[in-house]
Length: 209
Image 1: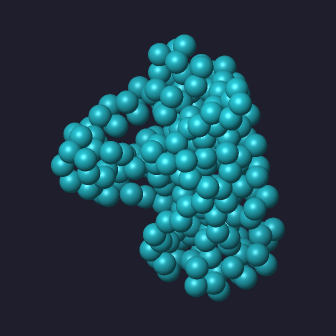
Image 2: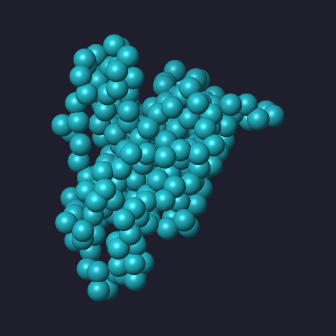
Image 3: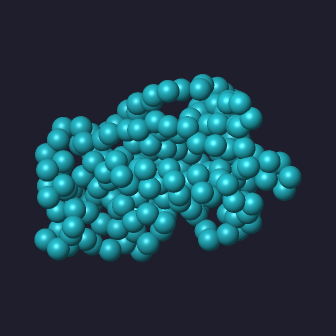
């Protein structure tokens, strides 16, 4: 469910009106997160490391209201919950888009996500029919330890959807690190919100659940 935001009483009113005038209002930040405990937990539980950290990132994003905020006809709305749409490498080598529904528990998430990924991998065409605004776009680049990243944007027709990018894990001393890129619409999200997301994501990666 979504709710219309009253701009006149919104604490982001001045920021929103300012950045909505930009021809390209997106900005991005790249950093590394520590996946050491997350990888060990996923391996011990016999679950996909990718789906484990993907779920934790969605959990962190849903906990921060600005990452559930979108644009509709250039007006802000906020969703009760948002889901994740990652790029998927299909079995034929092509690109696919999956839609992974966020739910409150990891087992329920995995129950839906595993068959969805298998179905998309088996496709022979790019299907974007499930694209919707209550989503976070994910780019998965497990072959590259990137230090910066950019994305094609459908401006001015974006809906304020954030883009998360995950790269190739690497060892740093005794830790397993992973590059993460976060792109967001500046009328809806500020740098401090991205910092809040990174902290929430890292906290979840350190959990044993």
